[in-house]
Image (cartoon, rainbow, N blue to C red; front, side, top):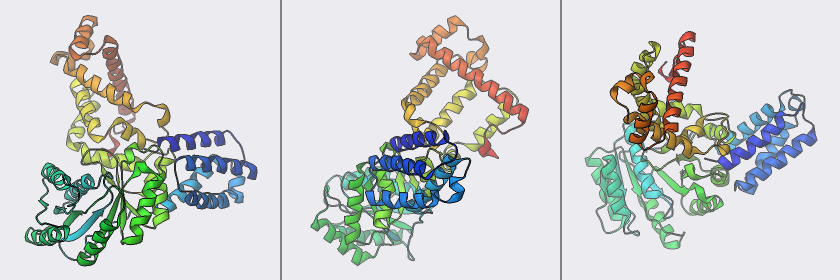
Length: 436
């Protein structure tokens, strides 16, 4: 996410850290480089202009010019200004005063609207909300079928009975009342391009049903096109928020940095992967932190708490304290890490990692190899890795479809982990801080 922009900014900050006190000329040069980086990231030029004017005003203050840590001061100012542009705080979801609440998802075909409807339903169900999906996109033939398949996958009811969108939504409201549903997530009509027929239908549906939320789904990878689409929708219907999809594949970040400033509407959710659980609430401060290469430890801890079985990890910590950590435990640890997300997603949340200089596929491939190698070991070898000699390594490599070098690398990783555990035990620190 935003690898190109983050990489450029980190390079700029690295040069800044080599300086002592900053002059006004130094600040002008830094701002020129930041401007270029933001424009190359497809950030709207008006947003860039306003952002840098605010940064410049604060950077030219005496406490920054005389600071002994000018890079940190500039980063701090930029962080607060980015957070301001992105919306300051997380925007909540309005379910409305009556049940079922009605949430419209609007957007063009290809933005991920139908998939996002299911992801949103899954997210709400995880928060103990009872939701139903409504297939009101009668224009795209496969839309209802796709929604039904997704609904079955997440065990959410799908209502799609009726000859047109109005009939379907009316029926869905009755269905929702009977089932005591908290919210209906309505997948509305879509087109490849904005046209009058689509807009007229959405205006009509909004006037008739007065949804508590109209969330616009836009493809984050389309940059300025996403911003233009959001502007056009916002001119015709009262959208209440935005869902940016495919941000995991967006190396530039222009849409995320521009769309709220241009439309005045908050980003409420971001899509960060293909899995049904890969939809996150949008936190402006956390995204600003990621963009500046400062990581996002809050989101990482949340993912760990949601995906890793705390009881299992607590049992493992007890084994680690007693130095009884073997390959059975190492295998469980690798499996649990995979639950948190891809290697790239985890890297994206870690501070100070030069993501543009690391191939994220290496991490994924390594974990798969390590799992295969452990699966090829005998139970005796898993429980006592010290017995794995040359002939055993050769057999394990052949059995797992890897090389002896791969087996050696895993063993090295395992013994290094043991050393770290010993150091942590000496300092009596928790191996898994989120268990505290």
